[in-house]
Length: 190
Image 1 (tube, helix red, strand yellow):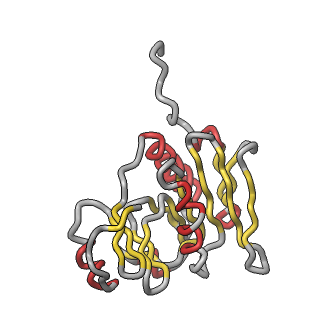
Image 2: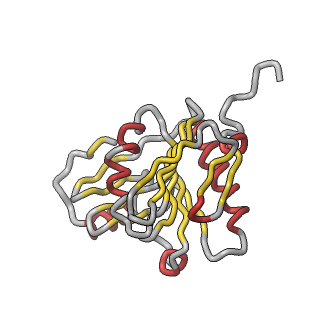
């Protein structure tokens, strides 16, 4: 994530400016950061998770949203998670800004992996509604979930060698074959 060269701005000024932009930008403590374009494998995983979560959550009072939706954390942060699920009534009625995710999934890339694992996770943990943070790496096929336990501590659940990605807080289970469907390009002989 690269900061744009500009003076610090307010959250309100950022939102007014951001809503007029074609590209996405995250906001943290008065600074604006341009979002980089994603690779095909990233798009496949996001689409797969949206389809699977959407199917499993159909008829429930929660919804999955993807990378074009703004998530506000506190008074100083707007992020664009790759995938998130919310049960919050206010979130389900909003058109622009969500505030109460239950699950967030970030699809890792070489350029964002360190940020997603450290600073971004620290920012997301400020959300009292968040129960799970899941990292999916299309290159290594690793899936790691962090779940908040009864004491509020974050516990790692490595699902890389399991059959399924488990999002326990929303009762969703997605086979890893479905998570990574289409990630590898078709072979030249197919």
